[in-house]
Image 1: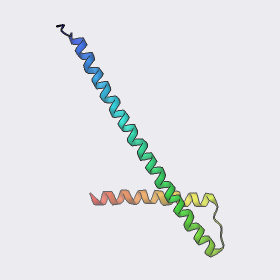
Image 2 (image 1 turned 45 degrees about the vertical axis):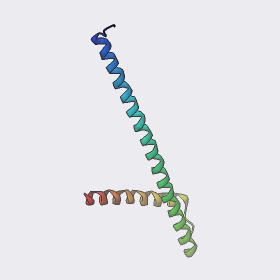
Image 3 (image 1 turned 30 degrees about the vertical axis):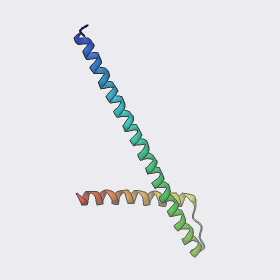
Image 4 (image 1 turned 135 degrees about the vertical axis):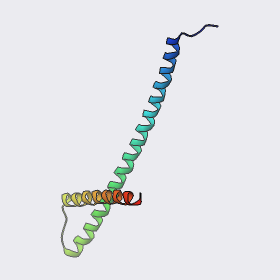
Length: 93
């Protein structure tokens, strides 16, 4: 049997660490991707809901809302909901 030198053992250990880092990075990227998909879908749902509300109110008042106005309203609504969710989370702690 051949004995491994300490350098070979170190290189094997380093490869294991590199594999572990690579696997961890891959898992992190998957989680980040899934979170971004969820975030985009949530933002799109808020935008759609705000557009529907603007359309309903516009029909009642004979007003049409510009796309920029709907976009600004949905962005403000989304940011406000983020702020409220953070406040609620901190309050729960």
